[in-house]
Image (cartoon, rainbow, N blue to C red; front, side):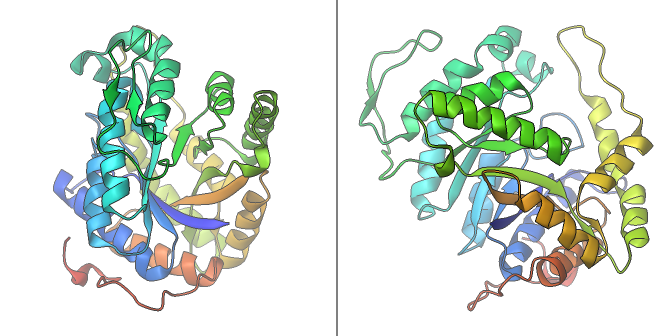
Length: 348
C-alpha cells in the first residue's frame, strides 16, 4: 500500500489565491520529507474551494522542487481539454521527471467551465468516453495516432513519444464511468465523499466489467482518497475538522451550472460529521484503524490523504508529520530534499 497526499489548494478566509497555492506547494515538499510515496493535486476553475486551474502546471512545479515522490493530478477535467493537448503535456512531464508523473482525469461537472472553454454540455454528457479512448492511445507509446469520431484528424506522430506508457487513472463516482475505466483496464480514483461500502461496490463492479473485457483485476491498482486529521484525542481531531472544513467547503457554493438543474445543497454540519465518521479523523489509534479498513478495499493500492481539513498552515504541516509518524509509520527517506516542516521554511 502506498501513502500519498491529496491537495485541494483551497482558499480560506483571509488568504489570497497566492497564499493557497504556496501553502499547497509547501505541503507537497513536506510530504517528500515525511516519506510519503507521492502527492496528487486537484483541479478546479473559478471557485475558491480549489484555486489550482491546471493540475498539470502545478505538478510540473512540484516535480521540479522534489526528487523522489511521484506527483499526480486528481483530476484534470477532461471535458474542458483536448485529449491530445493533455496527452502531450503528460508525456512531457513523464519524460522530464524520470517517470514520476501520474495522470488522473475526470469528467467534471456541468459547470460554466464548459461555456468558457467552448466545449459545451454535449461534450460533458457524451464525450468522456471518446476523450479517454484518444488520450489512452496517445499515452500508450504508439508512434502515430489518428483521431476518432468526436475528434477527427489524420494520423500524426506522437512527439514526444513516451518510452513507456504514462500511468492513467479515471476519477469515478457513477457506474457508467466505472464501466468505462474497466473496459480499458484503467484504475479508478475514488473520492472523499463515498464511504467504504460504496467504494467496495464500485470496485466490485469494476472487477466484473474488467474481467469481461479480458483484463486481470489483480493487476489494476486503484486509488482511494480520505480526509485525515490526527490529534491527541478523537474529540480534538473532530473539533478541528468541524472548525476548519466548512469554510473550505463553502467555496463549492460558487459552482455555476449550465444545465438548469438545481444544485445539491448538503447540510454542512451533517456532511462534515459524515466525513469525520468515515475517514481517519481522530487519535492515532482511531486513524490507524480507519486506515486499516481502507487498506482492505479490494484492488486499492494507493491511499490519498486530504490533510487540509483543519485549516491553517501549521495545523496542516503538523497533520502531515503526525500522519506519517504516528499513524502510517513511514520510513524517513535516507536523503531528504531541501524542505522544511514549518512555515519558516520559506515559500516555494
